[in-house]
Structures are given as C-alpha cells and as structure tokens.
Length: 217
Image 1 (cartoon, rainbow, N blue to C red):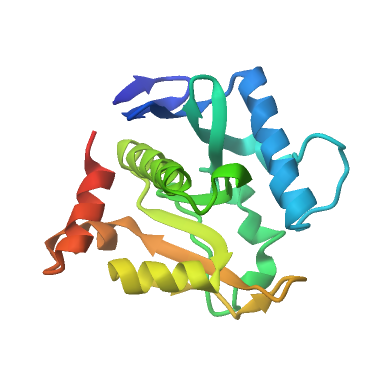
Image 2: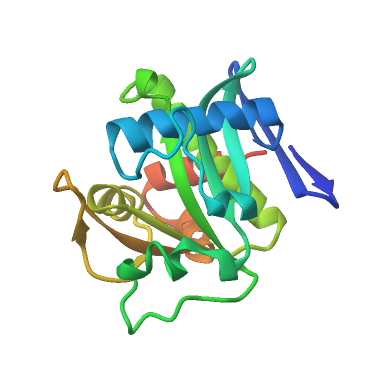
C-alpha cells in the first residue's frame, strides 16, 4: 500500500507474512537502524571507522529516507535512499567509483541507495532473503510513486553479476573495480527502472515471477 503524504512524499507499507516493510523516521526505530549499521558496517565489515561506540551515522543521514523491514517493532533490515542528487555519496565518498567518462545524473528522477543491511543472525536464511527482497520492493514502489527512474548504488561484483545473470538486468558500471580490505571486489552501478520493467516481457518465467512480485501492491 502506498499512502500519499505532503511531508514524506509517499509512505510505503507492505505486509508479507508476519513482516512489514515501510519507510520510517521514528527516533526509537532509527536508533535500532544505527545500531544495526554499527554492528555490520563498523564491527564486522570494518568499512567505516568507529566514532560512536553504539551507532553508525554519517552526514548523509540528514538527507535520507530510511526503509526498514520489521517483525513487530524489531528491525530486521534497512536501506536508505538519497533523493537529492546534490547530496549523493557518488559525488564524494564514492567518487573513486565513477569514471571520468561517466557523468553523474543530476536530474530529480534519480536516487542513490546505500547502507542496505540485513540482521547478521538471519543472513543466508530464507527469512534473510525475504527481508532483502522486501527492502528492494519498498524502494521500488516508492520510486514508482515518486517518478524516480534511475538508481545509483555501490555494490560487490558478485551481487551485480547476479543481477545480470539471474534477472537479465541491464546494469551500467560507473567505473573501475576496486577491492576492500578483505579483497572483496566492488564498484559503482546504475540501473534504469524502465529497463527492469521491460524485462516483464522476457521469455524466462523466473524473471517474470520475480518482477511481478516487485510490482504487486
């Protein structure tokens, strides 16, 4: 369900089994989000430094809309989007992922996804997979409601390759591959949602089912 709101553009509410996916800004729930990010991005992956012993936050949060998947009031996963191109991480922290030949879109039909994370205790389980898919579904439906056609994001080579091979998505790479401190390869990526929707007409029924699930209200 999509609820129009002048303050938040659109409020997304998706119920699947005993889970709810929605955008949120309640302080107590944001506290859970920052703690989950701290556990994963700071302690486990060590992608960011530890400035706060309990919370992983940065200046981009000031310009973000946060989506989460909840069981009751417990946060199982989250992702944030930045819908103002002038505040994209691609312009600063991810600039090394953008080749000089790629011109970062500055139109209002473009958003950036970052800090997608699932609770480590359910990763590599069917529940963890469902949580991740619900996060993408909520951002997708928000994007359609707000006329956002393009997504930027930084991700691992493995994930981008799976998008191409499993779903046949057209994913543009914005620059050269880089390696993190663990040797994991990653790069910047760019998706046109119109191309995703065209894949609904693919002969491969697995792609059709996956995208119909994304579109289902």
